[in-house]
Image (cartoon, rainbow, N blue to C red):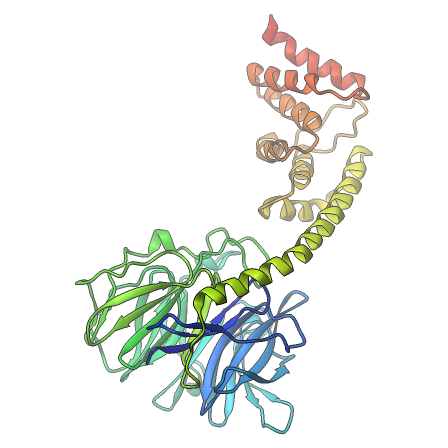
Length: 484
């Protein structure tokens, strides 16, 4: 068995999120989502019930990620779609006792969906823990020996999930009893013969959860997520490292700590686990490990032309996959070109709006207005890369204290903290004269006369005709000691 259904989460361009592929022949076909009324920006959980397949599709809603549930037939065609308004940031799907269980990571909840062929889906709460916001990052579900298990990251000690170190596996049929804990980013519970396993995404290891013991498994390379054991093979997905939280839109500079924590790839899959006799040639991006139990051979397929993040993998038993992967790449590229113009327009409008707000805030600063209410917003905008240079400048002004430009002495609140933001604004080309004069004053206050004079001289060389006389006089004063 080498035919698979794959989901790509947080995908660009929109609509290219589900694919069928043959891991032996490399045949690849996109699932056509053009008839879905809402823009689909990703897909997460997948499952199969008889000859029907189900996929959790991601749509953007204010503040989080909404969910569409899609049903596919054996030809890979979407037969129906339903909006699940209760489910935010859906992750894995699991068939269970005539319903579909779906994880709502955005609210720390698991829902049961009854979707008869002649009506709308009926959704009920199946399990929750600390419901509200995504504070536990529940993700995958798996049934094993008549029980339902759930993996989650657990509480994060800071603002970033990268520091979460108490990942847990819960037995939901035992009221959420913790059966494993202390894991790093557990994902993708899966069954291999008589054993329930999960992936430890940060270090690429396979974690025993329940069932028959097995030999030690060597870690796989990359940030692993998405696993399937079928037909004597193990399929494990890998994803590109993130720099930002996709669901929340905030900076996650090291969200996927793959390169520092994952050992070198030596993964060959055998009956007693991973062996180091053959090395898997892997990359750090989006791809698929394919390990054969009979031969011990492991290989890695590069899927980066199709997406950045692979989420789930299920076996495909429908019509044979025969699509040309080169044409699938070209199809996605054509969609990128079509959507690129709209994207550039949206970026331009956002940049224009941000510029207007920045001008308003600077005018308030120059007028000596109380800016305490804007302090938190400026700090967020200036620290969320890639920050616009005007936000870096305004945040630096806030850190320095108000300067109303009328000749009064500036209150240097925290020049050491302000300096890197001024340099970021300077690098971005924002009002170089004003930035340089602030930098010169900081160096001068620190008694670094050479540095102060150099920046003051640069400021004088580009001073605008309407520069305030007292500002020019101050810059000349700073330059003089270095000339004597």
